[in-house]
Structures are given as C-alpha cells and as structure tokens.
Image (cartoon, rainbow, N blue to C red; front, side, top):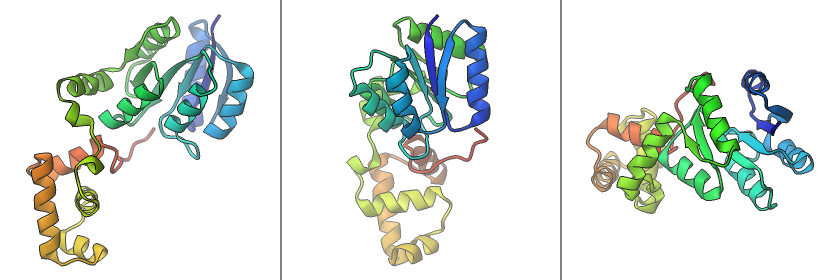
Amino acid sequence: MKKVYIVEDHLSIREMLAETLKRNRYFVVGQSGNGEDALNEILELQPDLIIIDAKLPGISGLELLKKLKSTSTKARFLIYSAHENASLIKDMIEAGAHGFIEKTVSLKELINGINVISNGGTFFGPSSGELIRSFLINPQSSKRPKDFLTARETEVLQRIAEGYSTRDIAASLGLSAKTVDNHRTNMMRKLDLHNVASITRYALQNGMVELETSF
C-alpha cells in the first residue's frame, strides 16, 4: 500500500482527498495546511506520493516542491490546484512535478491521475493539458509579462484587468491619462490583445490577478 502525504490549506478538501485515497487503497501517512509544517513531516515520513496545493500560506506550493526535490526524496509529486495557467504549470514541471490536476475534475479522474503518477507516469487534467499543448505549439504563450513588458506596462495591465478606469490608473500611478493610454497601447501591441476582455483573460492566465473561487 503506497503512502501519501497531503498539503492543502482547506480542511474540507484535505478530508475529501484523504477519504478518497483510503477508499482506493492508499495509506495517508500525514497531512498539513501549510508548507512549513509539511516540509519537516514529509522528510520524516518519506511518503511515496505527495499531493500539493499550488497556493499555500507561507511557503508556496512551488517553493515547497523545490525544497523537497533538493532533499533527494524519491517521492512522486502531484500538484492539485484551483489555479491553472501556463506559467504556473511550466514552473511546477521544471521544479519536478509529475502531474498537475485542477480541482474541477471528477473524483474518478483525480484517482486515475493519482494512480498513473504513483506508478511512475505523468498526468495532467484537461485544462492543464490544454495549456501544455498550447505552450508546445507556441512557447511564447507561457512567458511572463515581465519578459517583454516594462514595469509600467505591467502595472497598467494589472489595473485594467482589475477593472480600473484610465483616470483611476493615472491617479494611482501618478501619471497623466495620456501617458496611461500610451502604456496601454504599447502593452496591447506587444501582447496582441485587442480589448479589455482579452487583457483580463491574459492577466488571469498568467497569474497577475486571481479569480475568486470557492476552493
């Protein structure tokens, strides 16, 4: 029976995962709501599979993954997250994750992914898999805005995505409305975006703003 450790800050989700794993012949050796506590326990318990929420208080899921990989642990890693974007998935894969599953999948698909990963394979949920395919076709799609936007252009993009008007953005950044419009024009040209909806979608996909979720 393979040993599993769960790192998830929402108790209800931790309990759901633990119960689902137990019903499918996995042994949950421990669980934690934050990366700091999880790090020490995982090193002591040496589980076969570690399920990590990407968004954790304190040490992030990515930071925890990097720290665990640096200890030469032979565990398999599954990222289980309500937030999926190309940059996050790419970072997790590069850090050593063996799979990325969004919290919107069915329990049947979740267990399928857990089985694949725990047996040495890789698995990605439908949304994350689509993002990976898009990246393989167009690697530029997962580059962070900072890679080709100025700091001001990034600030303007974030505020537009958060619903601020040009006047509000100008006031918050201490700029004129004309300067804000210039940054907006340059940012949209560089990213090939054409309206507020596409700007907002880009910001969400690249983790610049977060969509409120019940998870």
